[in-house]
Image (cartoon, rainbow, N blue to C red; front, side, top):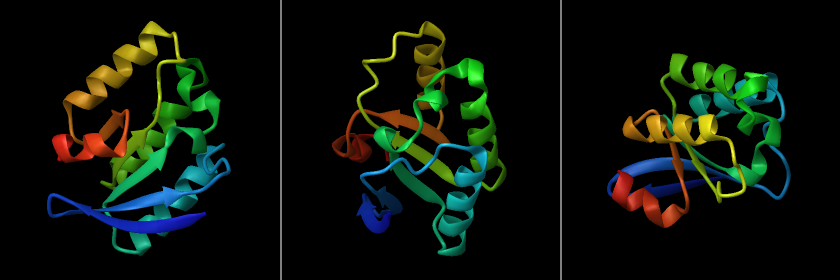
Length: 117
């Protein structure tokens, strides 16, 4: 795993770069959150392919638990990826509602960051 500092529209983000799954459990998400927070970031970008598919199945409650941790520590989470493979209407509704705010955002690409921030 590599943490890369990027700046878009005067806003700094920590982007997580990896070929592996980074978040498969709440504990791994909490460890990542602590690492990012310790390094002084309050905005993190993680790619959907680095998150366990269970996160995107809302019945597992993993997404809610992880997003609650990020919310508690006031670290903005941006998840980038192709979400077209997920058929769940409740997940699509969840992502739509999340994107209305600024705390958790689901974007199709890094290029969309400039429009969102």
